Length: 360
Ligand code: ADP
Ligand code: MG
Image (cartoon, rainbow, N blue to C red; front, side, top):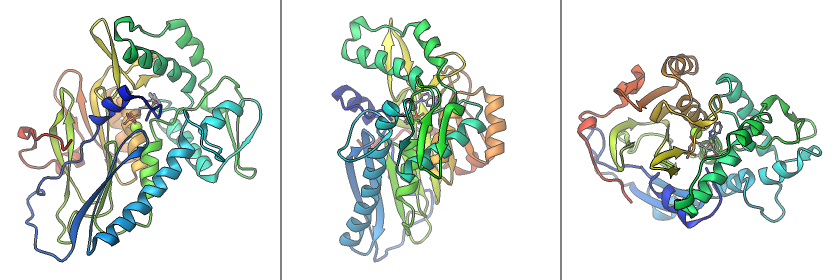
């Protein structure tokens, strides 16, 4: 989640849309008085949001979609590390001030940070929001490369190593009584790009019942089956080589599907691609997979896990998947895709032969 607005990033994030609306996974649709409606928004998390739901009237749908969207806007503004919003203390404010003194924040920020601390611990730092100072350097290199491709260059190794000295998440101090955030290391910066989108989606569908699907840039969360008859939603997993087509179709009736991939945001130097998920062990774009897809109930957890698993060797990833109970599809850089048992059951028949176009 990069919230810096630029035409170039917009173009790249467009390929992240992969909600697939095919006719189900085998169950036949019965005529019903409810109809399916769709609404798209372009103003949160610098990506495309799609809300699909079944309701008896368009008004009922619009009302729910707007409610979901409003929550997303709230979280987008609070979690933004690039832009200011009048009267709002957000993570940009925190990054600017928390190294000097404790900053009083909205409880929603505290809750996100508490969860992020847990995820960093659980994954032994494979996903770590305190990597901000180091990630800023990659972000800068990518922005410059996209602006001026002919002079694209890699970040300076020393700068990355120095920044890495300031990424210890235990230096992020949260006071739940005072509602404050403080950085014990004043050079530390937060970057919640790996978790915030999925977390916000989870919050936005809280209390939403019925047959809804919310996708924020491909972070998909469904609140029940697609139809009252129980037909599942079909969520496509993009082919990393051809992101406008799908490699697999997953049938889901509840929970979330989140993918981290090397084709989502990247830049090139001397014909080599450098993507946006950085392995804290090498300080380089992680080099195990083309994509990792996670299916589990909570979309914040799915988002955190997809990034973490993208940074972990397969054997370690399998242990983590087992421990956290998430289903995973790994598409390695070389070799065949690997998946957990539960994931196999979600894959629609003939999926691997499927090559439908994305809906964009
Ligand atoms: P996306 O948001 O593009 O769907 P991810 O959820 O995998 O993809 O998050 C990637 C974003 O997370 C990067 O753009 C960067 O801001 C941040 N990030 C990159 N590497 C890490 C890491 N090892 N730990 C935490 N955050 C990371
Ligand atoms: Mg993620």
